[in-house]
Amino acid sequence: MAQALAPGGTRRTHPPDVFSERTHAVARWAIPAVLGLVYGFWAAANQRHGGPVTGWNLLFGWVTAIVFMLAMVGVLYLAPRLRRELHATLWAAFTGIAVGFLYAQTGDSVFTALFIGLGCAALVGVSLFYWCYTHEDAEGHRL
Image (cartoon, rainbow, N blue to C red; front, side, top):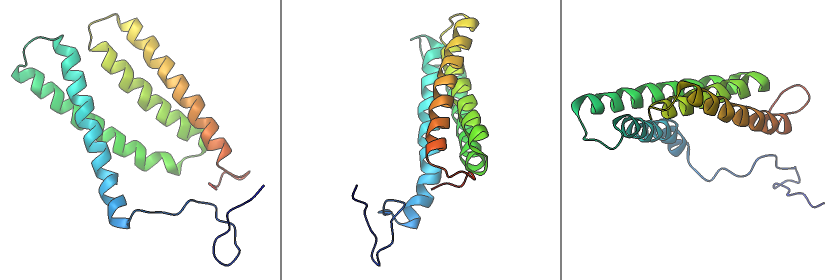
């Protein structure tokens, strides 16, 4: 099997980084902010059930967006510092809670929201554990 070699004959373990350090710094805050705004709008739309937009609905959307953004920034900061099992569990919990909360805003049964959130958390947890497991060496260091 052919392997890509970097200049000097050494094996390259990561793809080349095409973005500048400034782009990465902006993306660290822009991605959670944009996803938070989308999540807040989605939660507010679910809560009002297609009715008119009110001041309380706008406030609910903004507060939801800010809480989601802060939680996501916290997970993005904390998850890479954890072992693969806890890393996957943290992302699974975040995803399950976020999806369950969105579904709970539709007014359907709390148990349905719980099971949908648990299902999404299980899928994310298993997928992320597999990804982390295949991208680390035996000591748990990322490749």
